[in-house]
Image (cartoon, rainbow, N blue to C red; front, side, top):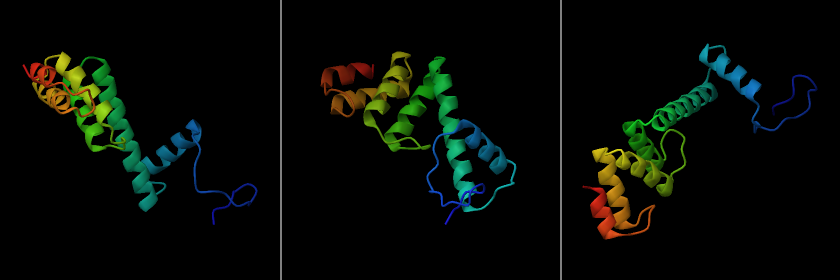
Length: 129
């Protein structure tokens, strides 16, 4: 059982969001002070979060490839993202609006098949052109 280092009282295993604590743990894990399976999982989770944050920043700055990647990640539930076809379609559509050919093809497929968007064969085909 995990106990408080200060009061020696039993503690739960679920952490609440606390920026200072998260940053301290992040630094300890990245510097190798804390290691083991849980540290590896933490590092992987932090790396995933960082990858998504960077991609979202690039997408917000108009990078259609980053938008397409976000669409893939939401579609497949990658990098710690929850699988969400509506969010996936949203990112593909943004890429398509910037004439990203891959985004156009996949957004068109989503619309033509009614996956994450209202089904409309004509609009789906038009998106691919």
